[in-house]
Image (cartoon, rainbow, N blue to C red; front, side, top):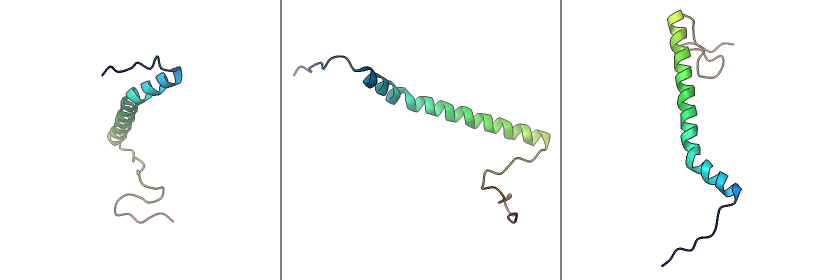
Length: 69
């Protein structure tokens, strides 16, 4: 059976195809970049001895600490 060619894609379809093909890789790259940047900031703060803010909700304190009131 011969596959029929439907013609060239519309520019919007081309954009969608490229977005679906390369979008997940771009998103993964941005996620890795942000994660490494955050880790570098935490390492730098640990070397300086300055406390880093918790990733939890504001005012919850660190592990084993009572929440601020």
